[in-house]
Structures are given as C-alpha cells and as structure tokens.
Image (tube, rainbow, N blue to C red):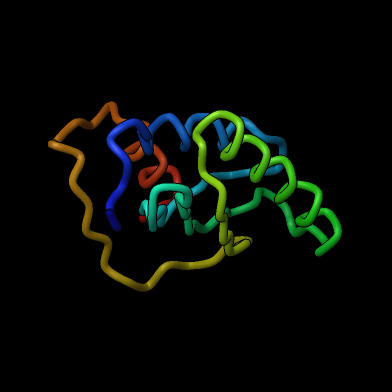
Length: 111
C-alpha cells in the first residue's frame, strides 16, 4: 500500500483547501494509504494573516472535515505557517503543465 491512492487528485485538494478564508496556500502535500482503512495526509498551510492558535484549530476542523468527507482522508497532520521563507529546493513532477493548480500555488509562494 504506502502510496497515494489513484482516486485522490492532489490538485483537487489544493483547489478546495485554498478556497478557505485566511488560507494563502496549501503545499508540501504528502498522501499515502497506510492500509485498507487508513489514508494519511501531511501538508503545510500558509495563512494570509497571523492567526491565533484557537483560529487555527477552527480552520483545522474545516480542513479535516473536507479531507475526510470529500477525499476519504482520515488521518491529517497540518503544519501552519505565516510568511515563512522557504530555503529548501523543491522537486516536483507536474509533467511540465504550467496550468496545474500545484504549479500556480508554487508561483504564488514566491519561490
């Protein structure tokens, strides 16, 4: 198992989560199916303002609900960020599709 289920499109997750208020973008997404019943997601969400921990918890509940009800992902680990400068090299495969929401998200992060 330990791979992204073929039924889950990362671009669809990006589009959906980026629609939430205060979410600037979701990135660094990893999805894997651990076993027959568990699908895990780890990601980072960059917010467009400096939110409190209690605000983050409310948004996290929304994210968890969306990921479970719309994508069947039942274990979520989200790292919150605000104006974080990424100093690492990013490797990704978008099949040279510059219109991919994933690629557009990277462009919007200023990388």
